[in-house]
Amino acid sequence: MNKLDYARVLVGSHLDQIRQLFTAGSKITVIVRPPGGDEHDFVMTDDDLDEVGAVVERTKAREKR
Image 1 (spheres, one colour):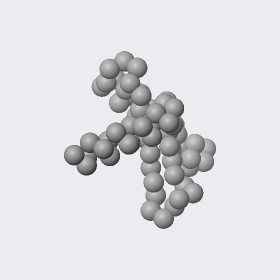
Image 2 (cartoon, rainbow, N blue to C red):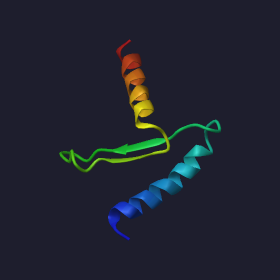
Image 3 (tube, rainbow, N blue to C red):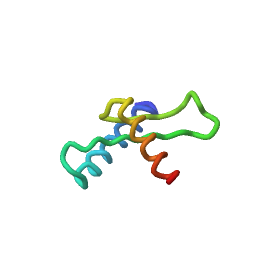
C-alpha cells in the first residue's frame, strides 16, 4: 500500500469516529496543505466541493465581523 492509500484508510477510520460526535447526516471534510506543495493537497470529503467552498466562505465572512 502506498503512502496516499494508507492516508486514505487511516483518515477514513478517523472520520468514522468523528462522525459519531455530530448530528446524523453531518458532512466531514479533511484538507491537508503541505507547505510549498500546491500540487500535493489532500482532500477527503463526503460532501460536494462547492458546498465545502461555501462553508469556507461563510467562515471567512464570520471572522471578518
